[in-house]
Image (cartoon, rainbow, N blue to C red; front, side, top):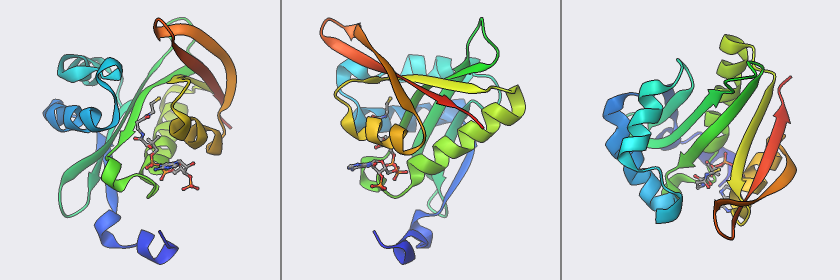
Length: 165
Ligand SMILES: CC(C)(COP(=O)(O)OP(=O)(O)OC[C@H]1O[C@@H](n2cnc3c(N)ncnc32)[C@H](O)[C@@H]1OP(=O)(O)O)[C@@H](O)C(=O)NCCC(=O)NCCS
């Protein structure tokens, strides 16, 4: 997509704190982007939104259409207040590659660093999710190590890390 098209108002988004009423739409997004083994499902999405600290679950809404097109959620490590973790990020497949993921990630990083003084971020990503690994590397994450059988047998994860400035 060209830069001029990026400014097309069709793709302008708002990012706001997630609400319980977002759960169904986020669940539909999940069904489109994750295999059944990798999905949280509505109960866990609700629990994530319900228990998330302020600012750490954010929803992207397509302006004008009021449609949910992205979601990011994270947490702060219970033993280390300087360490944050991204639990999930997802963007509607029809709108991927249009920088919605970038806006969600940057907004999340800003909030977790401003409101909670987090200095380091980590995440786990499926080792074969090359698109997401490329996305994270583009945004300053680096691979720390492979976590063997992290999701299930032969379903390994890559632990990634970023030092927030
Ligand atoms: C990872 C994800 C959130 C990125 O969101 P996005 O809105 O597409 O990302 P952006 O447009 O901001 O960033 C694009 C970058 O991500 C990568 N990327 C995103 N979509 C891609 C695609 N369809 N094909 C190849 N690379 C892609 C590229 O590195 C790209 O950089 P570029 O635009 O300079 O080429 C999105 O692809 C997604 O929802 N994936 C499925 C869910 C998932 O795997 N989440 C991570 C779980 S840990």
